[in-house]
Length: 311
Figure 1 (cartoon, rainbow, N blue to C red):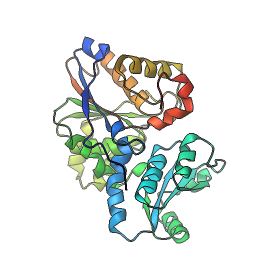
Figure 2: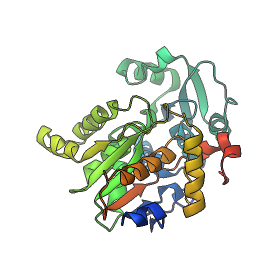
Figure 3: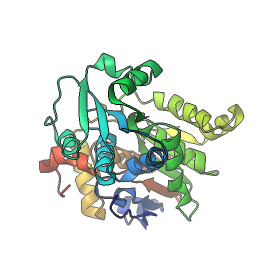
């Protein structure tokens, strides 16, 4: 059984000098505190997929991820705690279960890790490849990379449902765009700022549009929703998992001033973007903003010596 989940997650007002100086009322949705290992948007995207597993006659869960995948880490922890066999197809034939802390934790949690080359990994969305994997591994429930499917999308709508204020903006980091799509689907007139953490993050706009189609929205409804979306694509710091001294110093400064822990892959880049957009006036003075903390703090273990807080 899963350990107790802290739901709904807290919504806290951030006391930060920059925001105060621009009369910005900024709240943070503490999805990072949902669970010690299965936190943030990873739980949101897995939740309904796990319910589907329970309702079906599956032999296990199979999913996909890279070497530092928070989704792989979370799925392995769910499998361990709920007694569900899990398999992870990992991009990078050269990797092993001890290549980094994320993969080691997944293996220690009981996940079977299968390392494949980049070409084979690129087949992950193809029906024939999924059928091949089922023939090899039994009647597994296949969950897309990052939980990027209909159930993952609908799970993320709960973020908005749990909030009892009406902000002007939501802002969050994006890898696949699923969480942003879920938030966008659930909001009324609020604007949503997605901060892609990949170097070429423009594709996320198409991914979000496709997910809204899967959710059943018509063309006009999707067009209206997409008008509420802004992609802040200039804050990737060189690409997925990349960072520099500026980002690390910023993460440490935010922790010192607010006590909020951020990571170098997702939330640090998102919060940096938020501050820059406030300074530039792209988030106007007097706005109310909700920051979605999507978790992923276990990813800081690889740079713990650079940070002023524990993982």
